[in-house]
Length: 203
Ligand SMILES: [Mg+2]
Ligand SMILES: [Zn+2]
Image (tube, rainbow, N blue to C red; front, side, top):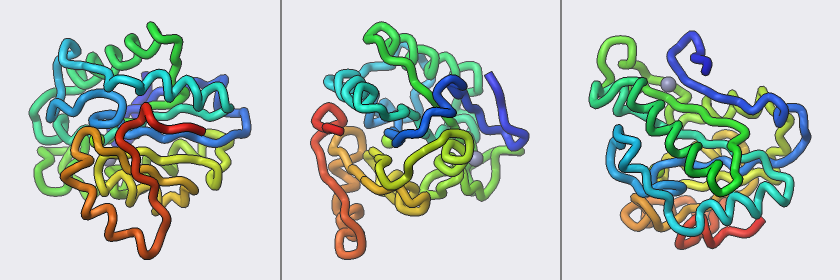
């Protein structure tokens, strides 16, 4: 699986990149799986009920399914790429058991203040920056206006706004309840959908 020169990891399903269509961009921790705070053990991966069924509905509707995840636990030195990728592999194994293949995954290990060594960096790929989304958009034939960003943190929504994604959804799972007031601050300027969980979403 490839790394970019600046230490981001990604995995693209190349057969999906040429098909024109919208993207379902998903934060991972707190949206697809329970947010266990800097998860580093594959055994701690727990799918939030309803997530896979919802993803399947979007696949059936022609969406590319993409995970966009800040993993500053790597940069902070809490765990290494081996552990991070073991967790990501587990996420994809559990998805495959339900018939789901992700079209793209992008992980950013950086943190502007807490990152150690090469991971100490103001990185536009780290949400609220839009770099991970832009990287996917450059490599897939994505219909941005029809695309969706789903996150439990304000930074997920900000990244979606910065990338020009048409539909923004804030969920209550993960950090969602704690972050909701800060997300509502955008409401005067931009339409945001509020949902209990990914499982409640329809294409
Ligand atoms: Mg999250
Ligand atoms: Zn980064």
